[in-house]
Length: 318
Image (tube, rainbow, N blue to C red; front, side, top):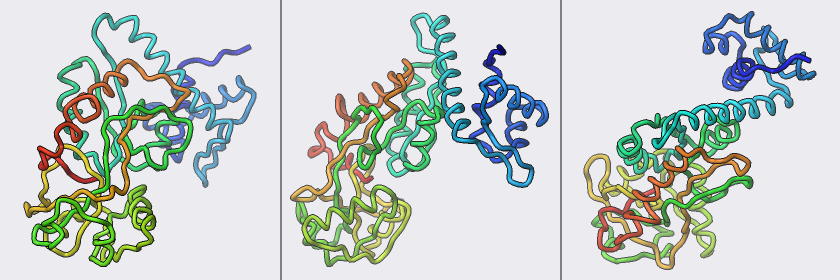
């Protein structure tokens, strides 16, 4: 009986990222015919069709092929870890691939990308920024080791570690009458013009926050970028409702001040967490990265929860 080689696994594990065999072959630096022969040999060994190759329709993995590609990536990752364990010694070495949710990436990525390599110079940190729709499939397929996301509306099947707490806050122009208060109620905001941040899960989160009180917001603009929400708030066009985050000054991208006020009673409270599939073990490098994120951003060290009332400039938005 023929055996499956690591090279075959390496070639096949790349296929889900490409729509055509020629594109995959170019990435893998082999000829299209050689890749096709490797796939055919793999299918003969496992006894199943793993992909459909049509020149007019490109490359499509069968359900068995999709499962095989995921497992192949995990086998390759385990193999790399085995080799690294033998070489490592006392220092962490090797790659770690992190995903970060786009809306708070500007508050998280700079801290990690600057500081973590200094602490662990032997680790090659690679960061991908995206939405839930980008990051969850990448975790499942093994293209990411861990992702930092909100713990709202997550599917089952993931382990998680809390990094920092976050809550919904009102962002107002400094001259707005409500900015004179220490806290505001959603009922006071319902008739005010809302600059609505449109992104999952933030869109649903905001609507639900009002619905709990039997209210509906008066949305005057729907924008896909937080910096645009803040820019419009800074110009007095309306107010924003955004989740708190660390390492953010209360000013717009244009340098205009923004008044950030907590909601009373609180609306949405959640956590930013590191997540990974429950059937996968974190590599030592990924675990060290989460340790560093917790230390620098939140729950177990300096961050938005430690002295937040005394340091209002450190509060920010989702």
